[in-house]
Amino acid sequence: MFTLLIIEDDVTILQAMQERLEQWSYDVHGITDFSNIMEPFSQVKPDLVIIDIQLPKFDGFHWCRMIRSHSNVPIIFLSSRDHPMDMVMAMQLGADDFIQKPFHFDVLIAKIQAILRRVYDYNTEQVSLRTWCGATVDYEKSTVSNEAGSIELTKNELFILRILIEQKNNIVKREHIINRLWDDERFISDNTLTVNVNRLRKRLAEIGLDAFIETKTGQGYIATEERNPNA
Image (cartoon, rainbow, N blue to C red; front, side, top):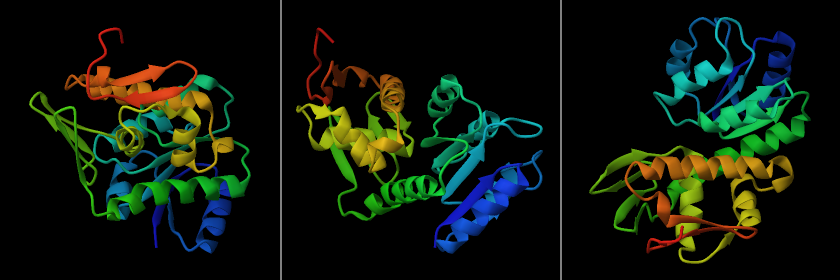
């Protein structure tokens, strides 16, 4: 049984989500004190967090930063605001997905299932380490390490890097990555993938590996073993 933490101040929406998610055998917890979310987060130890942007005291972006400073747990944002920058901000802060209110409950379930399967199933594979461009990629620890240092990636960043490394030196189409990440590309915008790849590059830049992830305009991305002088 997976444990879900819902950070939503609309009691009607919270109760509806709890009832429906519990029907799918999830262990669901809600937040009542919005001034101190990290304490129940630490107590519950959720496998996935669903968080609204507009909250009392501090907004969802604030709590996402706090959670990300302690954990790489998957995070799904909810928002009733129709503003593209909300999605961009959420992804830049390390969110795994973004759902616009009002939403169809089947879409929420599909996204939750896809993320949980992606995050927790692939770690059971025997191969946990990969070598790429002189760096060690640890799938279990979500880290990439080389002589320049070590960085920790979010689940989405690691999964994208893993897909590219699996087919290194070959172009991986954007549609293929989207399908692998979210199972059904209809549930995600193309811009979200761009944000995630840019965030991955920014993290890799910290250890000098950003140039080894190349964009092939109109095609997709490629993880190379040699630096492209024209990139």
